[in-house]
Image (cartoon, rainbow, N blue to C red; front, side, top):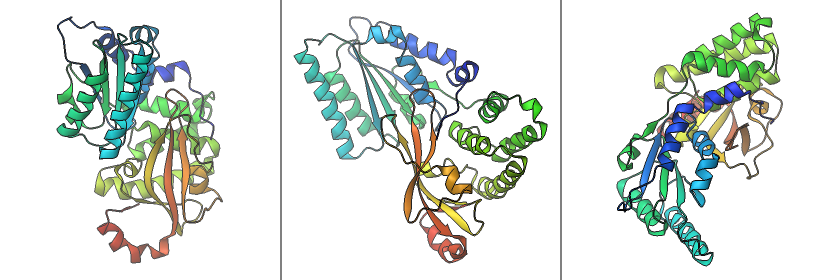
Length: 342
């Protein structure tokens, strides 16, 4: 799946200058010589609001790269003993490398991306490990969608929010129409606006998935069918549950999503995974399964979207195609297991 090129104005909207300025000021601020504690900046916000993009953008700033001898990234999915042990081992390995290179005085910037919730015991382990191996003047940025990390900061937390409806429409419109003038396609633009109203969400991931689907099928008939499809399924979910389909797999809850290509089939989405740019990802695309002729057997991985700007993450779903005729039989059992049917 080729990502849509973003124009400079659009990219700027995804990396707010004020937030970037605040983070850079925190990183470049010199501690007093008597300070013993590591300075910590929490960055909180909902999933896909742009936390990782902001941090990556800041870390590419020449002033930040000159201020720190090394920048360490840790992506922590859960707080099982083996994952915390891996964090400890990697910190110790980096420490040993600095000793052998006689670079003990160099400041470290430690970036910790938290996926799961964080309790105080797990945080104390993360912090004590970082402090043990980080020289004076090192700093920590920790990102999470959970507000409880705010209390672990040594400075005021930075909270990221989704774009306003107006800015989000601009974002979605630019993704969907690209270099074309939307005013030249008034019926398509009206449908695009209705799709935004129907989904009622301002998630970057959702916008990219839907925009790619529309861009690959630039046809008034397909867009009309797509709008009807989204209205039918989003309203079933958003109305009773107050949440959006793109959020549910990230909460380790399965979702049964209808399939446009075959009304008698659905796609069971089990979980969402985030992959660094260097990792291999599936070749099957989400839109091909949703509305195309591709019908894999058993459980399979699909590529939902690949980001076109740093940190260039790819997002994949684990899926399975299920006949909707069997839904009534399985519904009670699925609901008992926490599944959400769409």
